Image (cartoon, rainbow, N blue to C red; front, side):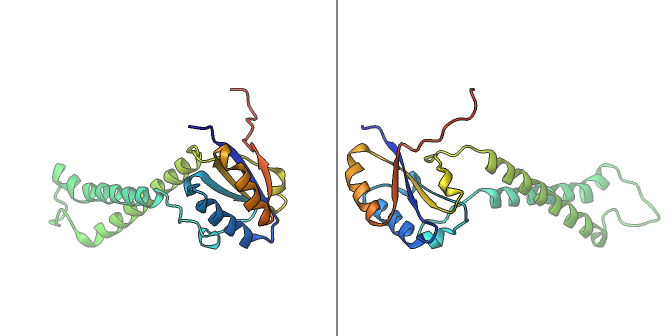
Length: 179
């Protein structure tokens, strides 16, 4: 198997349609969406570029946190009076109207904490796609970063320059630290 090289196709900031067409061209050459990344100074939605929707696990983590909060509230409302029964003024051990507040608060607290932790973990998780950068992206250019085998270089260069891209070969990200 040949070694894959990271390429960066830079488009001017007003060439969003050409960048989307470049993604289609790359797919037509056999490069998968997993091997492509679009980087820009302006956030573009997946739909604008014709890319598949990016899924995260944050909603699942949030639902799991809400469920944990609900179960904690269930234990506090109904488990604690059964473990430590204290009869006060002939009232019932479990009352639903006052329990609703605890259910709501602990469910929302579990949702909030787990969503925060989920976003934090998603942001610090490493990216396994191609990584690279060019300073012109900060100035407004749109970069299409992708891995490709060396035998596709002439076809890629011809197709992407025809769309108005400037190709940078070997655009690997450089480490800024020594370890």
